[in-house]
Length: 147
Image (cartoon, rainbow, N blue to C red; front, side, top):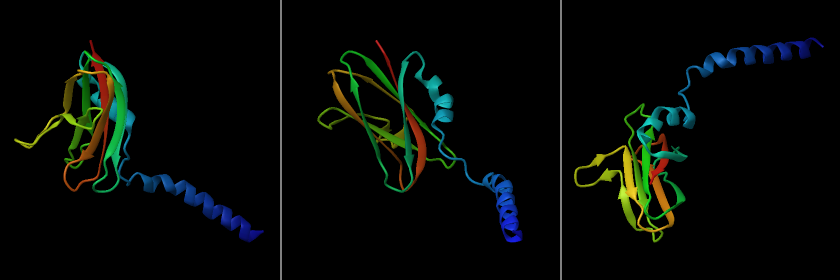
């Protein structure tokens, strides 16, 4: 009986002190916080959907697809949790997986936070997102449109 009581006391104390240690951990990737911080970059574009991007190891790429409609202007807002200067590269591909837009300009090695694209043909488009260089990271892509 005494042994059981001591075990329960130990478990109780362990649970009580667990939150104290968790404050020292690095905050996780929170898509809701990122959306709140970056949604204003849509400006006058209407929000469609957000896509969380989280890379747990070097070289991870996130891919997703979306149907875009002809003659509609689309915007992808690139939002990263920027605690270590990590930059997300986002590439937009057409239905044939041909690159049609990117937030990375190779000639000047600049990375932009917004991609605007006027859709020329209705169909499935593909987005690839990853973090520049040898970096892991956390971010969000926000898709919007306007006619």
